[in-house]
Length: 510
Image 1 (cartoon, helix red, strand yellow):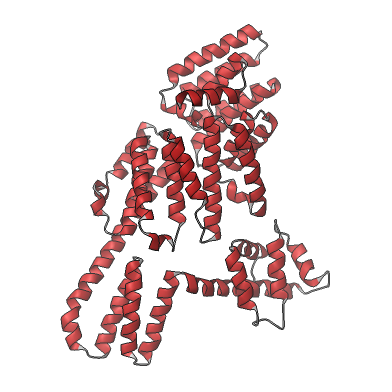
Image 2 (cartoon, helix red, strand yellow; image 1 turned 30 degrees about the vertical axis):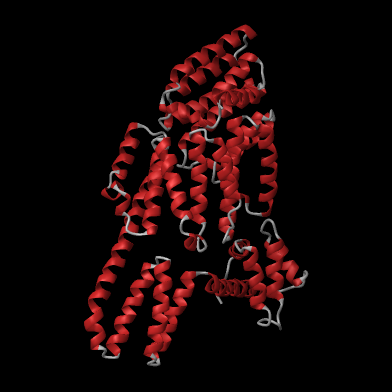
């Protein structure tokens, strides 16, 4: 039996939802009565928070000597058992698996010349596949219709139905090609914005060229529900990327309406719906529709996950947007309560799943707004270490280095400032991100890190505030979208807490 690395088995067990774990226990009950070590190993892995292979071996064999080969075979067989149980579980809950089994049943009936039975199953399968837009299965069903008719030498059927079958086949192929074309447009935009969100002229032109594809001219070009979903996903992500927030809001709202209008498909897959809700929260936030933000967040957290990945996605999207709301409104104490709840919940899972987002920078903002500068610095260092060498989110990497200067300034680490300034300058210059905004800020840090009187320090802050007001319209100023640099400057000038400044500014806008 092929070897199964222990870490793969660990990740497989951890990926199971509660209902899938219960199903596995039922699946193996009675199958392995003579050897319950599979169940023991499964339970031991399920109890672990972090992977420890030696502890697993001891839990099964209680420190008895055991051949490495025997333990490896146990793990490999358990891995296969879990896969088989998941396949059985999916067959009962997934439309895709139901269709696959129905078509396998047609093949079995066909071999036994039970052609009328084949036709009955094909009719049911076609109805199910049509309702769920499974065009691949529909093409296979049509192929079986022709095969059964040919084998029966049913010339009357072929004479009457062949044109209809040919037309349907072409229609399904066309819809599949249509979906594929929209998916490619979406992925092109996604790649562009994930590599760089600076929105310089070159990138905006690139995005405009992608969105001007003839397929994006009108919703009617989308030939299926699935394609229409892709159409509005593309519109939504494009409008956000070029900062057209009214269009972003309208497209995200239309996308949600479209999804919520097809409850049949939502019962099958909620993954894209979770993303659509999250995007709508962002669009509402951009237009300062904060009541709608809260309403959509409430809807998001109530979505019933169908998979473990859905549950993780709901958690990530809910807390990322909830943190963002607290940061925007200046409700840092509420943010701290939510942060503690979030950190407690992720203790049960692999924390690496939460380092791929901007969580650490949000941690920084919440700790900073709550006045805990040391934890803010720890969060920032965690994020910088994680992103070392990454080509993603260069804008956030630039922001993180500016925030690093701010937090050391707050902590009074003047001995480090000079070194940090040099490394920050090198990074920004190398990445071609040294804009006037960064230059002005680093000049301020350099000036104030030297011994100055309070009056000189205040003058430098007032000068920076004036300069930033003149630069606020530049695209590069967008790096301060997450952290309110102006409120920080005002708090330093006035002596008032940063959180109070942010909260007052928000209330004045509301």
